[in-house]
Image (cartoon, rainbow, N blue to C red):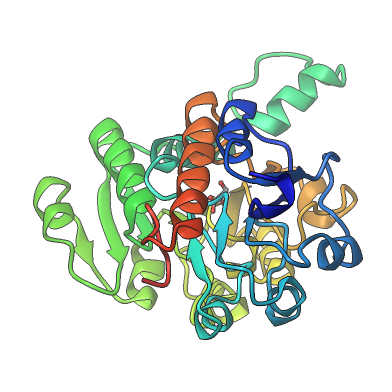
Length: 326
Ligand code: DGY
């Protein structure tokens, strides 16, 4: 077949070549070569006339982009489990399928939430900085005291796949008491982990350690804010590996300053990247990571595989392997 008859795909970032080759075998593929996302202007140009797009969280796919692509666009495949960067409703109205990459990053992200929980709780950043900056003078009985997790109450906000994997690790490993929020009762969590489903206010009032695992939507945007921080126990530890926008960051800075929040571990912020001079980054009792929840060899490869499968199915007009607007 003449190349110009092949479907056109725009891929907004480099990823596993082996997976991109599967696209190249059936389509004309343009892969954005930079490590930074294409600018809005370039994105609008590149998608024109495309049959499929493979996008990242940092690409805002709204009506303007969908219209710039035009009627040929059949599928937008997001290289992420979250898809808050995509106007799914607008895609649906245009008959465009939207795919995501669930399951394969659950363990990696849950592991990172555990990492952040311990790093924040035991003040690992602050302690390591003392050593690095030549401030380690002696062993002190009251120096760099963190908190003990074992036996305390863990609040998991959002008991989806990742929330559950995180809770399994923490409850199983450190024998924590578990409370959680969820749209529905989770019989397995109640049974095997002894979890109790509660309203958010109750979770905030009971938890010594809180981890956020909700998808971003209108209901969860800045759900942790001045009012909800006030409902937490004093000295709580907070972890977020979901989306930065679930937390009002100014309110978090105040809560850290007043020690309402003892420490915070964040893999996600608003915006991303967060300026390195931002008070959250500079705060001694935070650890901020550059959104690396799914950054393991296995997860990222498996995400590429699903993202490509989604495109191949979408080009053939078939249901996607993982479809978000099905
Ligand atoms: C996702 O997939 O939504 C994560 O935030 C990045 O892997």
